[in-house]
Length: 291
Image 1 (tube, rainbow, N blue to C red):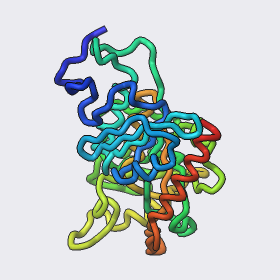
Image 2: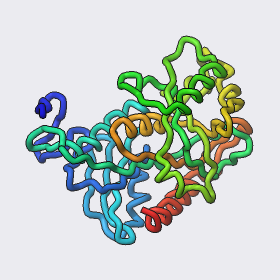
Image 3: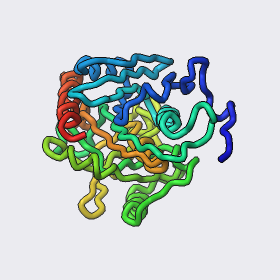
Image 4: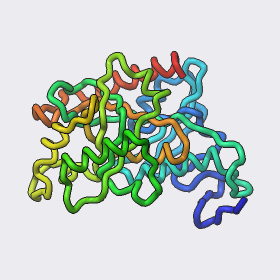
């Protein structure tokens, strides 16, 4: 088994992975990712105890227990580029021996769940409601640097999407489904559908301030898309990267979003912090009972 070079796997002086500043023993089997570093403490305030607190750049991590079960909450920052760091370093923590720099012979699989905010793309999904993503559909370019794997249904869905949306001149989209073992617990009280991940907040999500956009019909085409029982429910900036890398690395992934804006009816939540707080409470209830 080949040794991974110091330039490829960077380990700091305390034996921790470079960006996350975590050691393998500081990570739980279930990891919640949040975009906002301040949101980590909004989770961990419900823990029975906190064993680990680490911070490096925008990556804040708390690991502790709730209801006798160990949980890690980690801030990823915004965007697919940050997810590339987070997913690869989480996997390294559990599947690479930091002493020998070799891949472990026994594979460890994590549950990785994004809990964040998003904009709805359907009129019947109101602000302050919750969405559990059945798929992550990436309009970013991240997975095109890897070797993506798609099921037959995902390939057909993606082909139908490309034909419908007609996004000329942009990178090839990709799609990955959520882990069924996780998704099944988030049905009651959740809308379910395809989450589109964009590489930016303004032009990539069809917002026009002072700059025009290449695809002015993007939102309408996303909203109108159908493939069998599937439709696009929302978009944000992380889910497809988590799902895509998670599958390639063998982890179970899911995304849960509080809807803070509805782009169809042009509404924004009057108290988005309260909506996120309710999603956190709901997730922790399900975590304690089903994980």
